[in-house]
Amino acid sequence: MKNELYGDGIRSDFPAIQEMLDSGVSEVCLPRPKNFYLIDKTLKIHGGQTLKLSPTTVIKLADDSNCEMLTDCDFNSWKENVCVDGGIWDMNNKNQEPNPYWFPGKDGKTAFDRLGVSRGDFTLKAAKKANALLDFGYSSFCMRFCRIKNFTLKNVHFKDAVTYCFQGAYLEDFKVCDIFIEFNQGAPKFYNQDGIHFEGHCKRGLVQNIKGQTHDDMVALTADDSGPYGPIEDIVIDGVYSTKTHSAVRLLSHGEPVKNITIKNVFGDYYTYGIGLTKYHGEEWERGIIENVCIENFKGCHCKEKFDYGGKQRPLIWIQAGVDVKNLDVYNVSREEHVNTTPLLHLDEGASVENFNAENITQKSFVGEILEVLKLDGSVKNLSTKNITNE
Image (cartoon, rainbow, N blue to C red; front, side, top):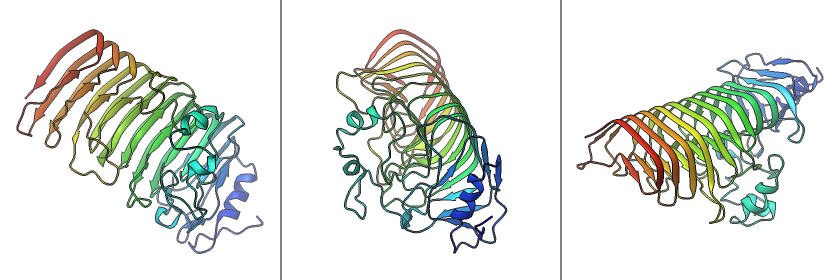
């Protein structure tokens, strides 16, 4: 190798690690460092490669690097068999430029300024037209991946990302498993600090055993949000464990479909909502399209903490106005509520469900009043309920 791998936490290890990735070897296995690996530029992994670190190996973004830590080599070209396994990925957010969605960088510009759009026009003029992940110049995301078949991210600990820990689009046959998420401070506020965030054209995926705390969604499937617009389908989310978190799982559509989604084994307390089927933005005439969703084994409640970006305290399961759902099954849900008086599940006025099955739902209220279990202000064509207990 031309470049030396230091691992002393002082000198940059980027040249050596990137040289290893560019060599074309199928597995880059980083040895345990003396201290930790320091990088000051974005590492780029190629198709047919695995990047492997031990679970306790720290790789840290140097002060004022203002870049992603890891991406694939080319967002516009398809590649296969990419795997990232292990490591504590510390984005060192307090020493990077702030969250560019809300705060200007050293150039005086936000991400919207750099894209040449207003905040309100962002999705219509930028993300909607994108055929790959948008180049913000400075995205503030820890990892980003696009156009990969057979993608795996596992055994990764994300620490102090500026905003999203992970963003992916055009991923097919993927696994994101055994992930821990840690945020110790905002950047500078607790805004947009998502965990695992999927944009359009993600298909046939398993998201499993996601733990920690976020200040936006722990897991988000957003078909037309801040990345390329497109369908999201055939995803299993199995195991989301969190405490004092903004929300566990969001499905988002205002025109592109999100369908065939299983969400199971979700446990935590939330200062906004637990699981949301949302539109969030888009034109008033647009409708969210969500099909075939099963929510199973969900135990949750609200917490008092709100941090900087709590939003309104929503129901534990929230179906937002403007969303049309075809086939929603909700099984084995338990709530013991000490904080919030919202219903366990609320179908907003202006939302609809064609076929809605709710079974084995238990709610206990400790707020001095009996709370609604199912508040159906929107329209339901076919409703089936069984074994609903409310105290």
